[in-house]
Amino acid sequence: MRRHRYQEIAEALGARVDAGEFGSGGLLPSESALGAEYEVSRVTVRRALESLREAGRLASRQGFGWYVAADPLRQSLGRLGTLESQLEASGVISERRIVRFGFETPPRRVADALGAGQVLRVERVNLADGEPFARVTVWCPEAMGARLSREDVARAPFQELLDVPLGGAVQTIGAALASSRDAELLDVPEGAPLLLCRRTTSAVDGEPVLYSEHRFPAHRTEFVVDLPTVEPSISPSGLRLVDGG
Image: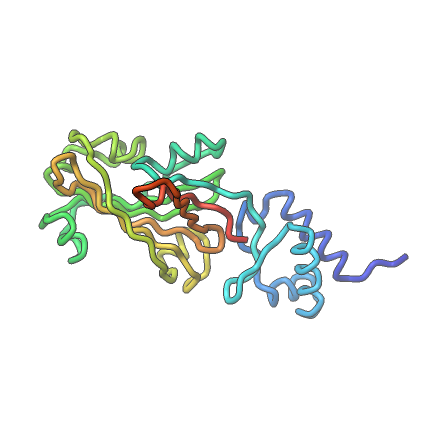
């Protein structure tokens, strides 16, 4: 029995997914681009994509496009820890790439958080099993960052490099749209939804020592809060990142 054209395209796309062409959680070309590639209408492409979604191979979001359905990446935020260590504990290969390192006059929000006129700014991309998972920018007062090198921040997190005991952090979580810089580093379309975490980390004496911003692609990420029922507190015991597909 002769197969329909959309079934042939679904099989071909499935093979490309299996070969890792798009990566875990990676975006596929647009429907129009796939239509041109396979010389078929968008209706045919859409049927092929939907068949792969029904099989659990792909997922999609309005205004974002189609992407490879990925296994959950979980990060516990119930305590002050590093993203890399928690991913590695779950069997994920973690990698960091430094894309910016230098001293500067900080933006107003950073200056207000740190009370510093000059800071060390480090921007990096975190990867999980080779795929961009987060864009992280960290600011540190110049007095504390002066002895650090680009090689230092590439090999270890700030928590291990600062010569002060840390007391904790305050973190806020909100929504943002991908800038052109986000799109370039996270391999998402400009304007795509992101989850934005802003964190101020303090020393045990309460002095702020780090301010950081973490941007996560929203099509792969969801924050779940565990709320304990034990009295007298109902404070969340932590947050974790799970697949939003």
